[in-house]
Image (cartoon, rainbow, N blue to C red; front, side):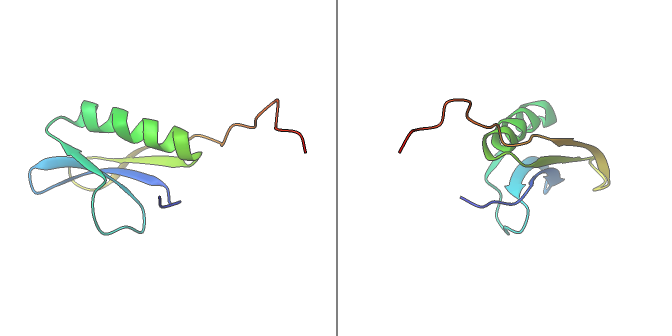
Length: 76
């Protein structure tokens, strides 16, 4: 699993998500809303930023999801 920020972008007629630095998409879909929701989940799981691009490739939105700290870490 890559550690880069998650990018939601439009390419070749479909919306895609990928970890920045990767050349291939992690998942694709026909609607921006569906792909964006999956990208948000990926970013939350990894504790990274979610960069959401517009259809023209410009950045439309950025959301940062800090890695949550376990309040009850394992002992020993």
